[in-house]
Length: 374
Ligand code: A2P
Image 1 (cartoon, rainbow, N blue to C red):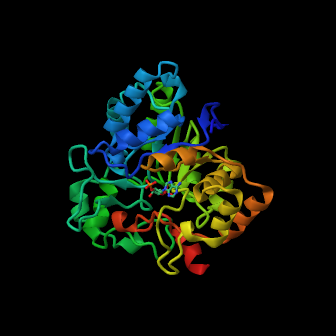
Image 2 (image 1 turned 180 degrees about the vertical axis):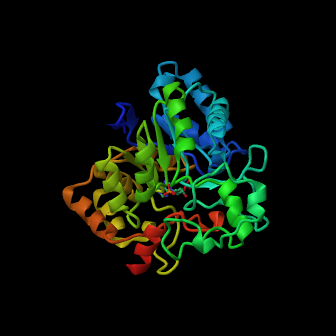
Image 3 (image 1 turned 90 degrees about the horizontal axis):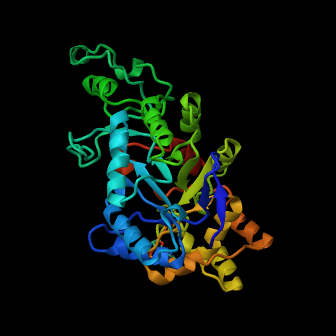
């Protein structure tokens, strides 16, 4: 599948990208999967600092280009992302340089802010893990970073959390209830979605320097994107989000198109996960399987074609060579089949990638609310 879309800055992006998340970074699995993908014809690789396997992706790219001299670096489209604990200006620059070193590249085609939230660092290059085993999170929807606040003022921080100025509607509680922790958030954490400026300025710098041909975000909701639009000198080219028939993300996808932001679908196959309340899986949906069977295609091919027909980039991942190949052999849906998939997707809001366990709160309260009311 050689189809491409064009981003808001004129950069061409292959419509199908190869996802590398969950490929193991230590056993050659990522190396083998990426090598198979490149040999199959994929030219778009979706990576991230957090996946901890960019060394292997880099080795696979290097060896593939050495063996296939007709393919050049410029023919590839490589994405990476900055993780939540690296949102400070210098840390963003550090992150892309670390990824570039591992990927053995001197630029990426796309650099994304992985989540619209900020986490603490452990003092080195790792996210800080709290006593509860979770990533020590800076609350995302609370106040703007204020460097004037000192430890002294924190200790005597007078206001209970309820009176802290916050645009959050009632019901969204901060990370911790204790005044000290709340104050701590004022100092160390910054509200990335209310004030993504420091992080975004670093992204813009990398774009200006040519280290990232395009910059964008991942997992950002409409309110997050609205905040970003206010301060961005370079508007985001991409928003990478979970999209599949159980989470068509109609409103967010429309918002992105209306604002020249290309959506990229991760987990486009609905993973292998079950909806806990109903036990449903995308892979077991009868309507979807009937469409695939009728056309002599795999369900994955139907789901990839559905995404491309909706107009956005699709990022299937697999570590199985046969599936890596068949996923790239794309098909086109008839109008009737396209509508049939749309009817399965209608009014669904189920997110498989729910980071509540990791982050300690719901990053996408809007979708959760819709899902609960559906
Ligand atoms: P595998 O690596 O064994 O192929 P998603 O991208 O939606 O999260 O889905 C990824 C999951 O879907 C992986 O577990 C992958 O397993 C599986 N998968 C990828 N391609 C296919 C396919 N063509 N048919 C069935 N399962 C697939």
